Each structure stands twice: as structure tokens, then as C-alpha cells.
Length: 584
Ligand code: ADP
Ligand code: MG
Image 1 (tube, helix red, strand yellow):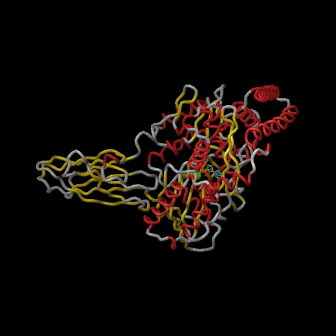
Image 2 (cartoon, helix red, strand yellow):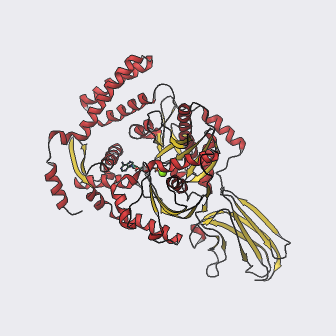
Image 3 (cartoon, protein in one colour):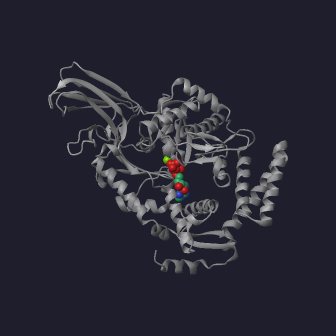
């Protein structure tokens, strides 16, 4: 069986195509979003998802998040005395999704279509494929996230030809893409975005606003307090999607502190973030040669599009309402699921051709007459070229009696090669030509799998060099891969017991950290008791305890969060006015 997977920075989802439609696959907790967080517990078992996310606060040293940001890089994450690569951590998430899908579908899942950001380079794509292989999934294809989102939206439209702007605003990244759908061809025309702008920045601003209002410095708080405040800020932000205003409050050193929040205040704290959002949209439009009016549909993807201020911003910018297909954080997964259906040759879906583009420029470093030590970039394949693509450029030698010409191969947009990523070098012999005598053609072929072939030939056809450039380091040999799979087998994805119980325990442990005194002892006693009934697997007692704990934790969370409101300590209307009169 084949499934579609949105392997996100913050959350991951799985989707299957059956009975004529894309169907999201629930995880062990019954939700569709599985946080892309991995934690190792005391016994060396791997925890993935909501449980692991709770442990970000309680066991930060054994827990990793946001590793997608480092896919294809050399960064590793230490969890309990072992360093894990981003692709290994991603493999754990994939294994969890695979396991959940198998339980839900009642059969083995062996294949997947995985979505990746359109701007992912070779290294990042190769690392994603590797993660799939480590997880025991044959990755049928990587699809670009904006193509997947456009595919999901195009299914709802009868129009034959439409231009989409996909505004994918996740936890840590903003991706803006212009995508053309013409009959059954879905083509990315331009991609742009901001790699360091997402929902997290809004959380951060809210936390900073809280601190500033109380003359505190966020960075000066102990790390755990910071983590708690960030979590509360995120919660407050989400609540603003549902209601006009609310409170954020937290106990700092035994003293309860609060601020009121509403969307106006949020905009006030984040004006520069909106500027950056606008810049990304303008950049994508400019690269695509489109104007605001050429865009037929604005597709909102990513959880941060649930913020009313984001929809408002887009509406102002485009003069029309953006569309929301289901929940924005599910759109990419829906598209990946539909594509998985196409791959499985499900007759009910018309065949669709997803074209890919090269999201960056590929070129060679050439001689800089003004500064010999500093090569300048000569583009061969420009960014946003549709794949597969082949382009040729011609070069000559600059020195007399030069025996060979060496071409360093770069990827990137900077004029100075030193600021671009060097993929390697290729050289060709040219005899002993005088300056300007030799003529050499350099052909770049770049295919849909992100493999670059460089072919260098002199004009007489006597000398020739050809080389394949794949991303350095990212590709394991078959042998290394098998060894890795074997090694990671010992990290079993935790499966004993019920996911709900593990979440309840993790939640309790987090609450425990936030409380003090007898409240803390109450929670500890409840946790001990729960662990005891789980250990003997007494179904009835577990059932009773679950309800008791959920109630108890609910009360404490309320206590931790809503204390002010319950006490009627503040007059909301009065505060509203006072805060709105202030200048932000
Ligand atoms: P990613 O693509 O990065 O994996 P998602 O698309 O799941 O992430 O988006 C995660 C982000 O969406 C988080 O920053 C989260 O706070 C935010 N988010 C989720 N739901 C809401 C909501 N109701 N209101 C505001 N922000 C939300
Ligand atoms: Mg996403």
C-alpha cells in the first residue's frame, strides 16, 4: 500500500487515497497532526509526536524538534549519549506514521510519496529519501509542497487553467509559490519565502511582549521558564484565532503576572513580520512575472494561516479573499495523498503531471580579472527553470600556454562564488593554448531527482570530461544503509500500552514541573498511582485512572493558566480599553 506524507518541521501527517478521495490517517491519539518531535525515554524507547513534545519542556536533553531545518547538513542531535542525524530523527517520525497507517488501514504500508519544500536542494532531498529508506519505506517520489497544495485545491475546481499563489505559513518557515495549473499539468513557476519566519516568531513576540509589560527580559529567564512561557504564548496565539481577545498569564517567582492580548496588539508586536511576509510575496510574483491580478486563487496552507491576521493581510494585499480548503495545516498532506493515489494508478483520479523546478541557480565559478583570488559566478541554469533542463555555456582560457581549464561548480544566487555552495570541480585538458584560443562548452543537465550532470567538451571534440554531481555526504552506500537500519532497529518505536496513556503521563510530568508544594505532590502521587496500574495492566483501573487524571490535570492547567480570570481579578473591559489606549 502507498500513502502520502507531509513531513513537516513542526507537524507531520499521513494521507491515503481510497474510495475516491484523500483520507487523512489518524494517529494513536485520534488526531491528524503528529508533532515532528522525537524523544528517547529511560529505557531507550523512541517516543514520537505529542508525547515527545511534552518532553521538550520536561526532558529537553533527550528530545529533538525542528530537525527538518537541518536536513542534508552535518548537524547532529545528541539524545542519550548518541548523536542522531536529522534523517535518522525524520526516519523515526516516518516509522511512527507508517505504524499508525498500518494500524488504521489494516495492511502493510511499503511505499510513500513524501512532500518537501520546493526550495530543498540536492542534499536535503537526498537526506529525505534516506530517511524514508531507513524507515523501511520505498519513496515513490518526492513532491514539492506547493505542488501538493495546488493539486489538492485544483481537485475542487472545474477550471482548466488557473494560477495559484500558495502561501504556506508553518511553524518556522514561510514558503510562497506561484503555481500554474493547466489541464493536468501542475507547474511551479516561482518559489520564494523566508526560511526563518513562521508561527514560532509570533509566539516569541507574544512572549517578549509579556516580558516587556512586566519589565523582564525573556532571555534572562531560566530555560525551563522560557519554554513554559513560549508554550503559553503559542496557546494564547491559537486562542486568538477563535476569540477576539484573551489573557496570557504565568506565575513568575510566586507572583502571577498577566497581559491581555488581541489581534490589534498582535499586529502591533509583529509589524516587521508582516513586512517580511509581504516581501516574500512580492519576490515570488516578480520572479514569476505575474501581477497580483494574474493570480486566480490564493491557497492558504500551514497552521499559521489559521491566524485571522494572516488571512486579513492576504486579503488586503491581493484585494480578494484567500481560499481555505479544509484546515490549512492539512492541505499539503491531502495533496501528497492524492498524488500517492495517482501513483497507485487509481483510475478515479485523472493522471496529473507535476513538474518540478530548480529552486536555485547552478553555475560555474569563472576568472575575475579584478581579483584573481575571487571567482565570480557565471550562471548556467537559472533558478526557477522547469525540470528536466539542460543548458550550455561557452568558455575560453585566460592565460597563455594554459594546459587545462578547471571549472568549480556552484549552487546559489550570490555574485561571489565564495558565498555559494560549492558542489565540486571538473577539469578539461586544452593542450597548450594561447589565451582566448581554446573554446570549451559546458553543459549542465539537471533532472527531476536533483542529479546534476556536467559535460565539458572542447570545440574540436578531442577532449571531454563528464561528471555527476550529487550532494556530498548525503548518499549512503547500500552497505552503510543496511548497517544503519540494523543499528536503529534497537530503538523501538514505543508501542506497549496506549498512546493516550503515554500522553497523559507526559502531560502530568510537564504540569508537575510547573507546580510547587502540595499541588506538585498531588500530581506526583497521581502519576505514581497511574504508573502502578499501567504496570499491572489492570484495564478497569486504568480506565478509571484515565478519567481521574484527565480531570485533575485539567484543573491544574486551568489553575496555571486561568487563575486570574476565575478570581475576577481583572475587569476585562477596563483592561481592553487601557491596553488599546496604549501605544504599541
Ligand atoms: P509545519 O509546516 O512547520 O510543520 P504547520 O503547518 O503544522 O507546521 O504549522 C504549525 C504552526 O501553526 C505553529 O506555529 C502553530 O502555532 C500554528 N498554528 C496551529 N494552529 C493554529 C491556530 N489555530 N492559530 C494560530 N496558529 C496556529
Ligand atoms: Mg508544512
